[in-house]
Structures are given as structure tokens and as C-alpha cells.
Image (cartoon, rainbow, N blue to C red):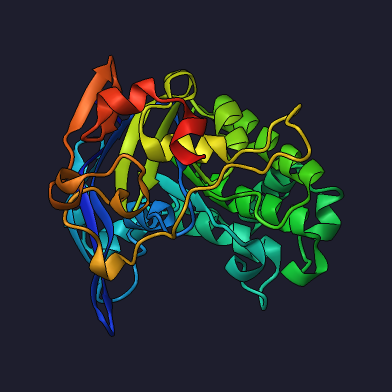
Length: 331
């Protein structure tokens, strides 16, 4: 049995203009010790799917489907039951540590809180464990930093504090939502290396959310490509990078800067914009931007086809997409 199983997950948000389907019929599995990368443009549903896993969706949102953790459907849990699971078995590193950390509490108190709530530690034991965690995530001089407020730390140090909070209860699954946002390249590498080391040593599963394909390629076993709230391609990292079947996946990879590219040559771009979640097409979410789109794409949801073992693609024009070079599709 998979540690985490997501079946036909949909998230509907209430807006002033009507319901918005932020996630549509999402399916994936995560085994113990595996790493999964979720990739796509901003607004494709990556973070909303993660918030659904954590039970932290906005008010008046609706969910459909199943999120099963060790055989228990999290969508059937009460708020009190989710509070016991969240931070304990499922933990999340949020995208922006400056807004995720509470500015009026010291970083030490914010790390101690889950230790006392979930592990029933005394004040002294929680403080000692907090010092160990700060040292573990690479904060220099933890005894001095434990009583600092978030604004007294650098961006990289704040992100390390977020990692310490997420790790405090030794969760089964760690969700990292764009964990290197707003950090310079050197600090990004340090944070990603730290996450990978901790995940490996603690035996956790990891869901890494990013729009950076380089980050995903180096840090995950499997990849889920999302667009318009739906999964368009899923498989092992090696399969995705080798095959590049779905037109959207091809467009994402073609837009990556490459060493050796002629300076005068423009980067490939995907025409158009991400669709409005309130008025998504009835069929494939990528229809309005896809060079292969036909009437069937506009009107019929494409089947999720297993093109190779554990490599799934949702496209009506698989044969044509597989035999066209990426540059030809978006030139």
C-alpha cells in the first residue's frame, strides 16, 4: 500500500465571479521514501493541491475525491483530527518564510510549539530539542539565535527555521512549496541540499513543488506536470526528461535557457496565458495554447494513457506529439 494516495481530487474555490476549479481530478501515489516533484506555471494548481493535502484550503472551498494517508481518508477527518495529523505526520515548508513565520514570536518559540503540542515535551526539553534542530539545519550559534525574531534573520536563515519547524515532529511526508523563492542562487543550493540530506537521513517522503525544472530534475524520483489544475503528464524523472511527450511539457522544457545557445536566438515561449479557472475549457485545459489542438481537445477531456510503464500522458494527439520536435511545436 502507498503511504499517500490521491484519487480524483478536485478543489473548487468560491469566488465573486463563481466557482473556480483550482484542481481537477488529480491522481497520484507516493510511497515511503520517494520524492515527487510537482511542476508547472504559476496558477496551475500546484500549491492548491498541497494545501488540500494539509487541510489548509481557504474558507468556503469544496473538495471532492480522496486523500488517503496510510489507508485513512483525510477528507473525512474533523478539524481536530487534522490538527493532530498536520505538523505531525504531514509537514509543509511554505513558499515565503517572512510571511509564514509569526513576526511577534521568537523563532525558538515557533519551533517549540509543535514539539509541545504533538510530542508533549516540557519547556526545558522543547528548548533543548529546538537548539538541536537549529544546529541541525545549519543556523550558526543557535543559543544566540533561538531568541531572535524573524526580522533579525536573513532570508536563508528564516527558510532554515521553517525547515526546522517542519522537521520538529519527524513527519512521514514533507511538502516543500517553492522552498527557494526569493533566495540567491548560492543559498538556494544550500537549502535544497539540506532538504535532501534531511529527507534521506530521516526516511521521509518528499513532495517538492517548483516551476524550476533544474531543481526538479536534481531532487526528485518522479515528476507530475500540472496545467490548469489538471495533471497532463506523470512519470519517473528520467522518463519525463527523456520523452517529453505532452505538448505543455515540451513547451516548459523548450523555454529553459541552455548553455551553448546562440546569443541572438530568442528563447522558445508558449503563446497565450494560463486559463481562467472560472471558465476552463470543457476538454483539455491546454487547448487554447496548444499548437496541436482540434475540436476533440476543446470538447472532450483527454484520457490518461499509460504510454510506458508508470508513464502517463493526458493528450488526444499522442502520436503526433511524440514525433514532433519541441522547437517545431512552439517555433
